[in-house]
Length: 159
Image (cartoon, rainbow, N blue to C red):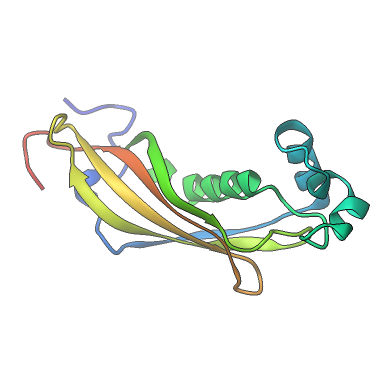
């Protein structure tokens, strides 16, 4: 039976290993950094410009968790909201390569690295996505692999 909510979205069978998704870009402002840090990551180098300048980072920097959240937002806007996604299963190999500073613009790509049907639940497929997020200087700021659960069109067909 077709799920009416996801009927017009891409399903497991519509996805291809090696497909590259352009995430678009987002500019990171001082207000974004401080607002996020106040609530979730209140280290001085995310909140106070003088303390940040004296830190290893050399200036006010985004929390790595904020960079991850912004990366996920770009993924949803550019790709996942068009897929019959049931949610994330977790991530591996998360690396924050360079700090995201006030005024940086981040963006990049996600590549479908693996697709496999769940053996125990054939109505679901598992999609692995490799993130490559960079700043405006093309310096990497975040890499990771994210596993996502995707609805299949035909649970009985083995892809």
